[in-house]
Length: 105
Image 1 (cartoon, rainbow, N blue to C red):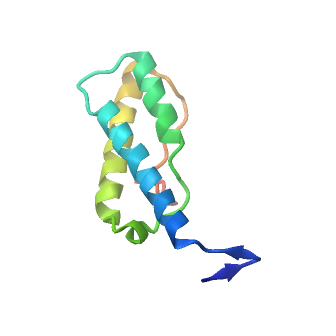
Image 2 (cartoon, rainbow, N blue to C red):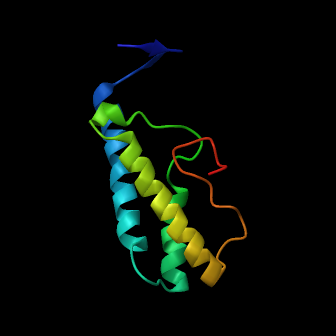
């Protein structure tokens, strides 16, 4: 076990956390993987996207997941949200890249 400032690292909890993020990502992918969305559907998808971690990378290997594949799915979702935002104008903010502190992509 690793101790950081009195906090105990729990591998089972870490794996569950990663899998929860994966489930959210897959649910989002299902929502945005349509030709068109209504404004309400796009806003709902954007709210889901906002729950994803933005400013740090996830240790996907804890759950046996491929980081590159999950990043591709997150990037796809962001690209689709940008397309829907162009049509519906539901946010004036830049949609940041999930799982990566580098938002220049």
